[in-house]
Length: 105
Length: 394
Image (cartoon, rainbow over all chains, first blue to last red; front, side, top):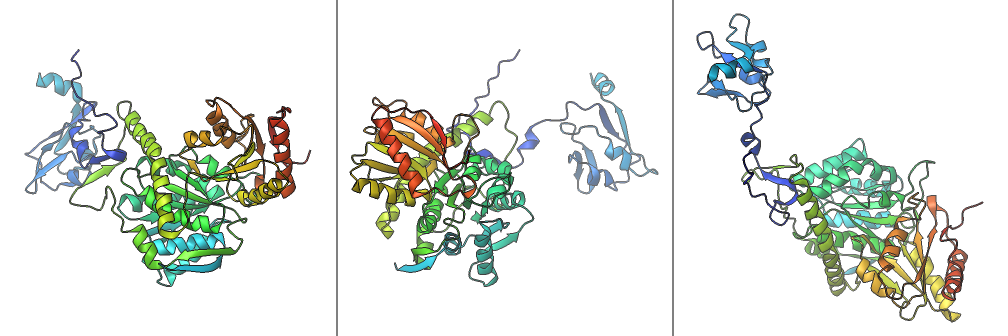
């Protein structure tokens, strides 16, 4: 087991009263317990970005007005993006996370 | 600096202190006997006498929440309450302290339900004694006014950053008129000074988050910071009290001693009963009885080391609790004082009196009989009963 080498601040140096810099949740990767993974089909996508609007965890990444990808470090696999993708488009499918990981190896 | 001689009730005095402080935000809900403070202050807002944003909330839970939000946003924020109202704030009291929001809360001591009762005892304030708030008790309207002004200087100090509650005794102080002195507006404005928050959620140049999840590996360190701030607050309170005296002629400490120089027996208590007791002490002194009084002003932080020094020559002490912890072992002040005395070489005998619950009068004769009993204990008499419910009908 890897030894924990992070030096944790004591009470004298810890920021006062639980005040932290903003946006640190981004550094905490919370997507590792996902059961389902969203998969995007660029050929079908119309870039309506309804998935981006509905994603509760800001995990749909957009660049210059176009779908860019999923932030799989934070996506929980809730499937809302796939559910709100318009029926005529269906550009997002949810696949089994374990199968996806096996495929990646 | 002009001292303005007035006749005011405790509630009027507290509202006037708030007007002169001119906080950025006040969020409050009325509750007897503190209603008048909120009512008078909201009139100041309506008249344009203050710049305060007044938020009329739907409960004390919301009052403290909104006050905390305002303080976290970087404003000087206050609220006012009593009894059930303070109890309804319970959850947020702990958070306000731990987030280091230096809120000052005028609080009027009143019994807790049930049975429902609007009169004075200290149950409400004692219920909040472990919340991380500085707690300052007042003997009269003058002290209430002075204590609120000092609490601003204590709470907002960068080494402290703890909230304070300044209490008066319901009806006895809150509704009784007496002669006192106000400072003029400019003097108070200069004394309290501008507010510089240690962190402000509205400071877009330094975005930050407040109150993040803090588990096994950080919570303990944050609680230690709180404990340390409370320990430091003791020196700060003394410093502010002396400075107040130098500026305005009325000095304050952690407690006041009354005829303790050669006292053989003593009483220790909080709040308005001190006035009555001083009168009894004077009468007994004229009879040649060596009695004295310690009026504890600051309950949090508890000045145990400083108090211990006062009891070195005393043979018997009555600890007067205007609340009952329902512990089967007396009230909260008794716990603290008895523990304070433990390390003394010559430890006085100590008995506890629970008195005045729900506004029950404590009379000159009650106090006299307690002093007389203390003299008997000092001469070797029994300390049984250890705990007496003074004035309760059998």
